[in-house]
Length: 81
Image (cartoon, rainbow, N blue to C red; front, side, top):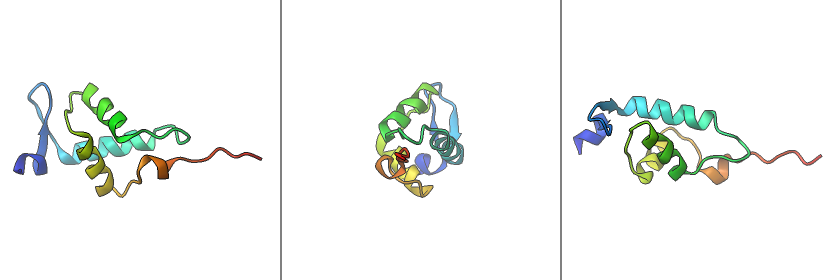
């Protein structure tokens, strides 16, 4: 589908670019609590609050495209010294 490769339609009808969504996704993950990383469906919920309606599997696909690990591999253990 060419729409998905070029952009995604927001709930208000505005089309936003895939590159903008990738930047937003990267920013969300960069700023997450490293001891409690976000699941893909939680990221999907955050994006939907911005009017960006994409599927959880699309979030996962974009995260993989950015070479960002899944939640369980991003978690930083607290030091137990």
